[in-house]
Image (tube, rainbow, N blue to C red; front, side, top):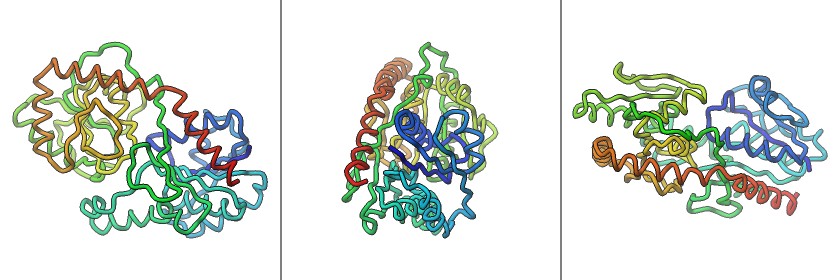
Length: 353
C-alpha cells in the first residue's frame, strides 16, 4: 500500500508529536510504500539517516501561513496516482492544507494526527489576541470533519468530547533507551523540560521555584528547553536545548519534574521523567492517563507549592512515588501500542480509500 506523509513544520526532533509520528513511520515503512513530504533541511539532517523511505519530496512553505499550500498539495498529488491515504502529522496550517490538497485531488482518506485539541480559553487568557490568532492557526484542521467528508482526526486516548470522525486512537510508544535502569544520585531538586513559554506554564514554573527558594535557599533547579519568553534567574541552571543523553541524565538526577503546561496531549516529557524515576507534579489535564503522578487542579499555585514542599522533605514518599512512576512507565514501551494504532489507520484507509 502507498501512503503520503506530510510534515512541513518540523526542523528538529524536539517535539513529542514529531517523535510519535516518526515511530509510526518506522513501523509503517516496513510493509508500505511511503512518500514523505518535508522541509529539505529536516530530510537531510534527520530523516534520510534514520528511515529508508520510498521517496523523499522536499517542500518549503513560503511563510508561517502559506496560502498556496493547498494548491501546491493538489499539484504534487496529481503524480501520486497509487496512494491510498494521506497522513497529516500535525494540525498546523501548512501541513494540514498541503495534505488536504493531496487528499482532495486523489480522493483518498486524510488522517490528521491531532494529539490534543487547542484550548481557546487558555490561549486567550495567557496570550491575549496572539492566543486567539494561534487558535485560528489550528482551526481548519481541528474542524476539518465538518466540511471535508474524507477526513479523520486522531487524538490521544483520554481526550473527551469528541465529534464525528474524531477518534481516541493515538498510542504513544516510548523508546527503551529513555529508561534509566540503574539508581542515580538525586542531586537536583526540580527540573523542567520543554519550550519555555506561557502555554507550557513556564512563567508559573519560575514563580513556584522562586517562592520555594524562600524556604529552601539552596534549592537546585535545572531547565532544559528552547523558545525562552521570560528572563530566567541566574540561580537556575539553564541548559537550553539538550541532546538525548544529557536529557536523560538530568531527569535521572532530578527529584521532581515540575511541568505546568496548559495544553498537552499524552506528554512524552512526563513519561520520560517517569522512566528516570523523577516524581512528576503537573496540572490535572484531561489528556493525561497517568496514575502515579501528583495532579493539581489547574491554576492552584498554592497547592503546587504545598506538594513540592512535602515531597522534597519526605525522602521515603519521594522514593515510593518514583518507583511506582517507573513501573507505570514500562507499560508504554510495548510495540503492541503502535501496532494497534497502525491497524486502526489501515482499516480507515482500506474502508474508504
